[in-house]
Amino acid sequence: MRDRNPKEVAGWVAEVRRGDRDSAARLVEHYSRSLIAMAYRYTRDWEASRDLTQETWLKVFRALDRFRGDAPFGPWLFAIHRNGCLSHWRHVKRRPDVPLVQDGPEHPGQVAERHAFWETVMEAKQRLSPRQQEVFALVDLEGLRPSEAARVLEMPATTLRVHLHAARHRLAGLLKKKEIRP
Image (cartoon, rainbow, N blue to C red; front, side):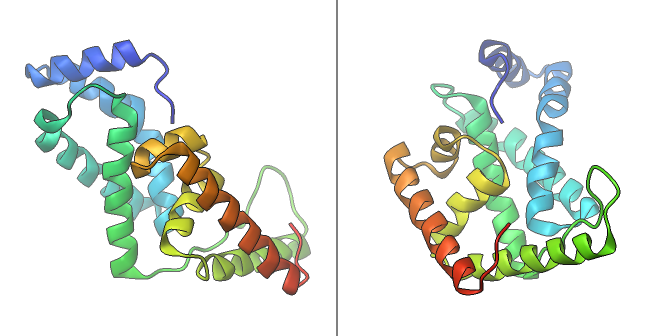
């Protein structure tokens, strides 16, 4: 997620450092929805997603003195959250389920097809390198812009684009072998 007004967010962070609880509440309100959605991609469980988001906020407020402020707050926050989600995912080892409902009524066959496609993509994703999996998840599943994902992963944007291209190419090849199309 991109900060809508980075100067305003930086002001909130400065106020939180001085002990302002209202600014802390503004930060939580501004980012929590995106954090919960990100955690849901890892857990497929709304309750676990809210718990992971709450744990992230605890970590962030404990570590706020270490935030240098020379870069936007959002990527720093999302890096902490991503690490917590990955740690949870490694311990739980859950495979994501497919949401059964989309924006409109679907024929049961469409739901089954989408479920089968999602399962195949998730299976193919496991055959990517760990770095490619992270890049693919942040850009193609989470919807972060590549420049934002590069900041979250603390890597040069060109390196991220190389990993993203390789991940997409590998996934396309794996899906083509199975003759599966979105």
